[in-house]
Length: 356
Image 1 (cartoon, rainbow, N blue to C red):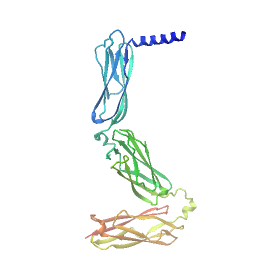
Image 2: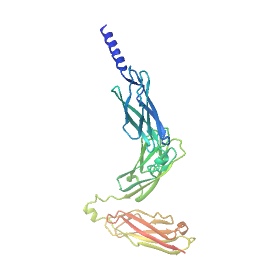
Image 3: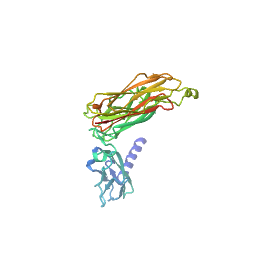
Image 4: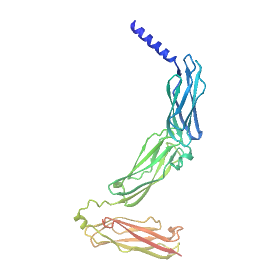
């Protein structure tokens, strides 16, 4: 019996409290996902005056200038409904948001209203941070510059992405180079939110030295017709930091016989021409030719031996094919010679010529 009286008393107290002022029908509104192009997103909060006297709204203020509440200036009569309109300005504000509106009423109560949602950015707002358009997503760049990295070390780079749709997307990567690993977070990207494609280059797995370029493709979503080609750039150098003084004293030394190969005058329909130079080891230990290459498509290279003993030389044959020069006005190429010479690991040989 005492328990029943206690419950009845609590109910009466609650009803009495409710009858003293506004009872809000809801205090949270979720806009969901919507385009920035909408401009102002609006909603209305309602509260019923359950008291026996008129009550007015004293003030309504937001915690951000992008959110604008409106309310009636006249008092709300007993039994009538108060309507507070809230507008969120989405222009220039892509991404998730949650804003608060503080409503103070004449019954001495302060109520916090909340609006939330996700703004899907318009192209005009996203183009600065995400200039690369790929349909369902936009990306920050098409190049991952890993920078200069010592052999045996790892380098990292990122591409930032943005989901431009009102649905979840699951981006993935195709055509990874063997020495590059990729991690995408989050794996499933909510509407209007950002994601990051983190790439790691493990140089131990890279077969080349010096300036190494490759590519991979980012696909915005399963079944998407769009994909973005992303170039990867890493400069692989040898780590000589662990050489002892004795090892450095006996280290190989690379001497290149010619710094310039001049193919003279030529016609673009001439047959390929060949010139040679030597790489000589003037040090003690064997000289390892890590890489000899040129980015110029008109120049091809053959090396007689990749391991050169003391006081021996490797012959390097350079073939120039004029028709592969394209529309270039001059032949002005560079050959990069990379060895395990700790004092001079990278040397250059210029290749020049002038078409007639």
